Amino acid sequence: MLTFLALASVVLLGIVPEQSQAIVIYTGWERHALVGSDIRLSCSFFSWRWTSEDVTFSWTYRPDGSRDSISIFHYTGGVPYVDNKGPFRDRLEFVGNPGRRDGSILLKNLEFTDNGTFTCDAKNPPDIVGRPSSVRLLVFEKVPIQAGVITGAIIGVVLGLLVLIVVIYYLMRFLVARRVFSLSVSKHGKKKKEGSQQRQGPVPPADPSKIKV
Amino acid sequence: MLMLAGIVVLHITTIILLLVATIDNAWWITDSISTDLWGKWVLTKSEWHYTNLINYPDEYLQTVQATSVLACIFATLALFVFVAQLFTLPKGQRFTFTGILQLIACLCIMIAASIYTAEFHTSESEGGYGHSYVLAWISFVLTFLLAITYLVLRKKSE
Image (cartoon, rainbow over all chains, first blue to last red; front, side):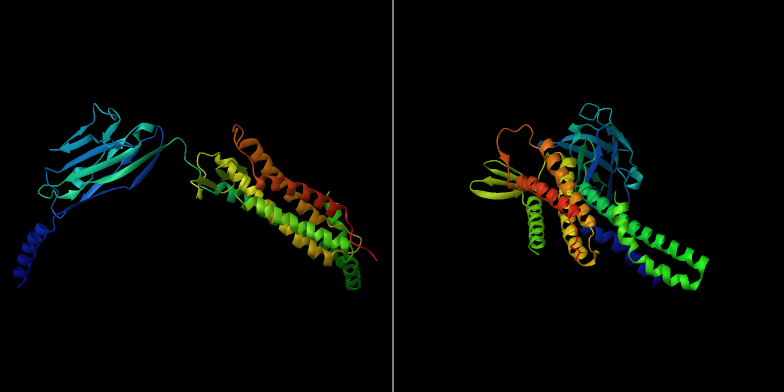
């Protein structure tokens, strides 16, 4: 019974992928980077088959505003071939691990002309039917400020300062009143307590004009 | 009594002017554009369209936004504090807290209008300042006068 089940599952695993064979490729959607920095463009795939020895990775690049793509990287037969004539010569490095289905590349010393779409196409024979996946690269001169961050920061800081000043002011008044209150208690005892409380009434309102010079 | 009513009406008018200056996108106007502080209205083929502000001095714009909003907030706070102080202040005292809040509001709108004048549209020949800009400066004058009034005024002592 058990051997029958094992055989059946092996056969099924062999049959079912035959019909739903499609390799799924994953890259990022969009990447942001600063001019002069390096960026790693990752590419991996999912396939029902074991990773074959003839697995291939291909990267092509289409500049922003252009309709043509140029091939910049190809991995086949266990050997990576990097761009040695195109826009990325001497700036491209293969940092992936094909055995682990990773076909990532490293772009060094980015320039503004590197803005564009990078497409990764992976093939895992006999699993070759699939859609290449694209990642868009955006190169900035400096990291752009989010809309409204400075506005919110200024408003928050000023209002916070206002609240802080008001709180400190009332705290000082309260503490000063308590100090006089406790001093008179220690010196003259209970009777003077009521007397000092009465005198506290008119004194505080005179303080604002003195403190707020 | 009349003086009190007049001051309150003037204060409310100032708040309304500040709100219009802050909210209405009309600091700079040309024949087909009405812009700032939050967006740009562009007239294309007899239809007005609202667009984002791009390629703009970002930090200065956000500072002008923040200070004009703060001016509105402080002016409104000053009104509430004035009404509160009408009831709680001992007789013969000055409305200092109200005056100080109003002074801060005056300072804020002055900063906003000054930064806008210095940094925006300095080299454009077409167009002129819109009604929001004018109202910003008018409310600066009014808040200043009100602040002085509050700092000098004393509560009536019978």
